[in-house]
Image 1 (cartoon, rainbow, N blue to C red):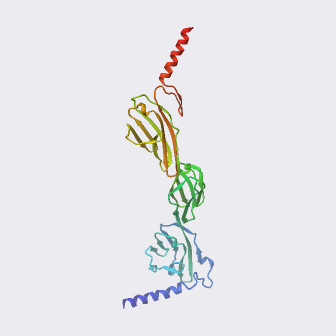
Image 2: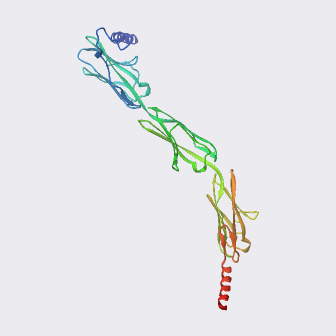
Image 3: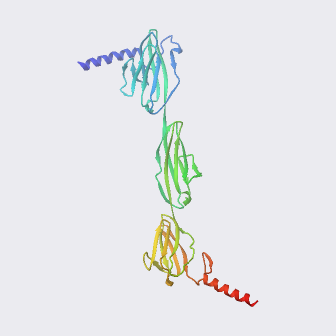
Length: 341
């Protein structure tokens, strides 16, 4: 019986609305003037906000309704929409106002307030425009490439109005490496172009920013070695610095023999790109030529360093070095020549 009563009430309401809203809305009755049907200014609302729809009533209004396209939202105080976001704000002789909360793109479109008066029906229509903040939906993952490769970075975003995409090299900053399109092409990439890249998607509402980390692998290069002079029994250090990605493994050699840590009173310490070869008590047998070799999966590089002692004259990478004993002998010869005069 309860279901039957509800059904009868819905049928009765439908018949009443048929008189208010004939097919082919909006309806113009005979003799109706254009001023009876009004078009309000567009309402622009951001996604997630609340929009209020209001139309004027009057003393002679008998029935009124708010519609979205062909769907009835409210007929008077009776809610027809099943959407919980739609609710009645107020209905009186002055105005008929409803609201839609948490607005989304599906809510965009034309809304009509239909009013039946004692003389004839009239309609007021308004178009709701929903703006959507930009959101990056497809972004290149962090990349690891070899030097000389061609690199393509992609950034796709949604939004309304359509967002503008901008690529730029963020760290280290390089204003010459940028793009105002969804794709950033970097041909024959070099190690100097490794770093953090920023994609920004912007429209009138907001900006969405995301980062891509670009790592460039390259073979080692080794700083030029500097020959070192040490006296017997003293402590001394040979240094080797290598630049490479991935980080290079550094090996030390004496002539053709590899040197291992903690052998023959020698210690090897590696700290990032720098390797130290330390002699705690230099002996005659320690003097000679040492080679530092840096190796990663892309290649290798090396440099030679001479460890020399007193009485030796080195003409190596560090220039010509005259040790103390040679200088002393030269001074004696000069003194003898001066005494003759």
